[in-house]
Image 1 (tube, helix red, strand yellow):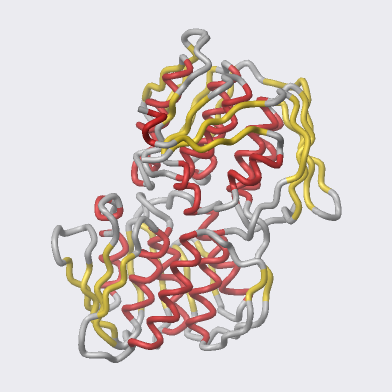
Image 2 (image 1 turned 45 degrees about the vertical axis):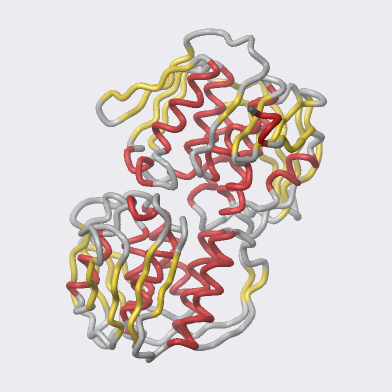
Length: 422
């Protein structure tokens, strides 16, 4: 396995980074465009591995529709790809097998499959019930009212919602309990309505009318989730000015809550006509607490920031992080322990406590095949110089240019061969 060595040239950070289009928005727009049957261009589409894989499969699915032989769709480690395509393929005539890598086969999909089966979809587990691989016999399904469990992933709801306008009877979606990551469901509904769908939220759930999408050319806004690592960098730097073009104030992305969170951690966000600038302040809280139920993707950056700053911090409602590309709770606990912190569970929250000072400037961090773990550990070089990140290419899943942007901020990034790291 490859690794890289990171060194800081200065504890003061000045420069500009270029974040690509939002992965979450890009993936939803690709599905909506394909369901519309109108192939107008999408500007600033995410260059993430997940989005590129989804785009390639959507093109392939067009060619293989109605074939008698089952077509294999391998989502690799992409949860969005596997879940969105599971719903998508239930209404595409043909036989399909959806699978993924070993970790993907451990991540839940039962809530989505149960919901689709209520609509009349033909789906069979080919190995272990509740997990990939799946065999899908695609055909027209009528729609109607269903109840689903979205306690593990909001993607279950988003996947079913997007096919709703194409169902003869439309869709009435009821939740068994309040969904996790609700802003992502709101994002899905806003994008659907932007392209002609009628989506109504009420006290019982979501109603979607049977009505074709009307797709048109569009531009994807920059990715707020990816910005979390630059907020972390700003918080850990002695002085800072980081420019990030393309981020908007009135974003549909829930992770723009970074603005408020990092105000408590010494970072001010200044908007201008091009995007944002991050600058340093002295306003750093002694204790930090936040409910992350709706914002799981920014937990790694926030937790790593608090660990490096020595801030006692509570993270409420993050249990669903155990079902991500890695068990992020365990991964963060293990890696942040290396800088002298402990992570313990108390009821519905996890508490991070700084226990001791670390003088070792030769830390080696594992990444667990998880892009967000790799990226949240990188800015720690500002506090602990000369660190090693294992399997750095995992960042390609969401932010392929991350290490290039890291270099733009004058950090030294060098590859280590396997023999060097042994």
